[in-house]
Image 1 (spheres, rainbow, N blue to C red):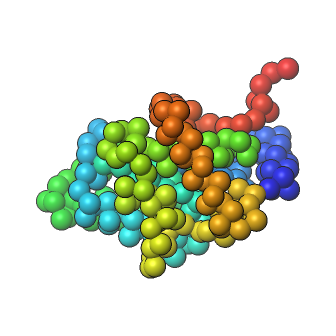
Image 2 (image 1 turned 30 degrees about the vertical axis):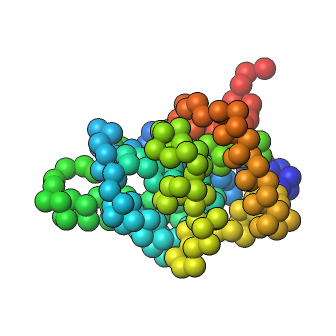
Length: 230
């Protein structure tokens, strides 16, 4: 994990000196990075309130993973927005994967519901997670999204999320890349990760750490001080 972080910091410094490749909404791209992505439905409408629509989003996410080798570490599909934790593996995977999911989901929904207009509020928000501590925090933050919304009491109860996939023993159409979860988070095995992961989630539930943290939905680099003046 430390090797990954050192490599990421080197890439970050190198890109900082050259100037980041910037895209709309101030999204910074750093090769080999881990990104937290959020995207909201148009005007925050509850366009994903029905299970069948969340199922379809998940299906398109699986297609993006399969077609573009999208490395998904965690995800959450709520009634009006989504969270993804994705590890970059080439310059085009992220953009192509997100374009497929967002575009196909919007067109399919409008066609089935005789609807016109935008499905998404805007293009996705992207944050680069640089430090291991923040990566853990982001992972748990995504897990607890529907608990914070008071839709469920525990993340295992919400079917359309990474936590449910990990502990429900889903046999087909896996969204998460378990090998990358283990290596990126620095564990020796999937069982080792599960033991620690469950403890972290339960600890957050026990102490009621369910406050919304705006830093996870802003376009920024999280966990570094490169851009701070001395």
